[in-house]
Length: 117
Image 1 (cartoon, one colour):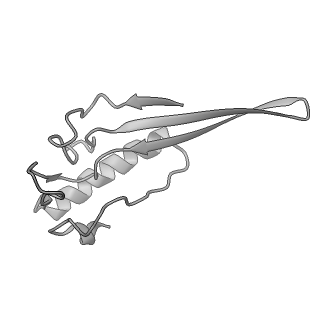
Image 2 (cartoon, rainbow, N blue to C red):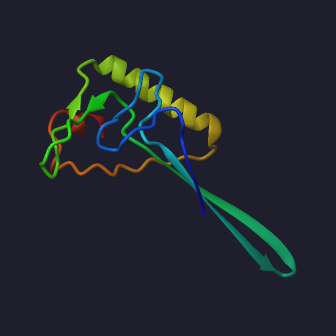
């Protein structure tokens, strides 16, 4: 297994959040698992890549002592959609087949997260 951290929007996990206007998400990391097998005298190599990062729109979350600090989503829906599109377009340039998984805990979130997921 190999993990590479994206250089475009790094920062401390609880301070740098969301995406920038170019669609680069905070704390993005790519983990690749490479598997080699041998069957019938032939060697086979497989690769599985997982990309994870912050939610790809404009939002912030001020750190505090609560378990789930309030999420504040940028008010401009069109701008958020443009940022998400840039993020997804960038991902599809590098990866052929993609799937999205929502790992958001909606119990502690306030605001309009439900409208995006």
